[in-house]
Length: 451
Image (cartoon, rainbow, N blue to C red):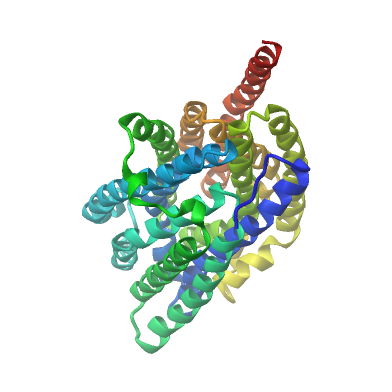
């Protein structure tokens, strides 16, 4: 069901919208972690390393798609906040067409470049075949990912964060069942884990699509809604394209980290990093959920011209999200080794120690990540995709610096500092932009009311 975020308590609305997003993102991570967990426990540490080393190049392509589709939904959300029903439907139609075009290009490029990228990243020879077998199946499944991303983004744009959650829960359960089925019964190795992921994505996407058709008249597209202007198409592209590139820029930094990690020539380090990143997502994804809520919240209120509510939402959301980030940092500092052992298995003492080191360093600085998500997503909800892209470039520079240079000096410890330095670099332009944007909007509204 749709939800209007332009009236009522900002804190309560944001929390109410975030909770399903938070649970959904956690299930998304359980969904992603299932492959790593099951592969590591049923096949072995080298298979876990093979799956883990594909994460950065997968995010390089998938991140663009996710950023692009989220950017498309911002226009939808702004029109919903403004009460423009026909505009909402036309925005959905435009998003479908542009999403199909982008996904076709991304799938072709990724399939053709997969092996070359893995080789370029100095993927250890012993895990290269499994890494390629896993990632190539994921790439062929991009249309399934698009279906879910488009449908879930549009439902969230009009205030429904619960239905995508239900679809994710179903997909997560199916993914786990299929992982064990393909790996243990059909003996398909890491490739079977990839098949399980794609099939689960197809089911999640179909569930969301069917629900839109039956329950969302505001998103039910008619023949007339496909008649859109070039100006409307460009309006979507100029927000969605920078957001897609922004995610890819961040992903390039992750690729640089993978390159530095592989240069350590240690399967143990690769496996430790893969495990710690999966655990790290249990904290970073809830923080991202608060950010995602601010995208819809700020977009709807921007469409309704409720600038005062945007300010209150930013402050109140950071108070809640920041508190959670501090709590998770404490948890990882004192109990991260036990979480790492769940993924790496009994007897992997060295790998568990490296994974715990990563969690302690990153967890102690989650407060920066909390603000980064809120500032970036709020700006995007206002239609500002340029500054978040600049922030992405700052992230790339700082993460690459840590990966290339600090890793040579401090080894795995230097790599652990890549993300915190990236967060610091991004927070600087984002903070300045949020302050200036809200001041500018306030002045604009004051002039409007005074006329």
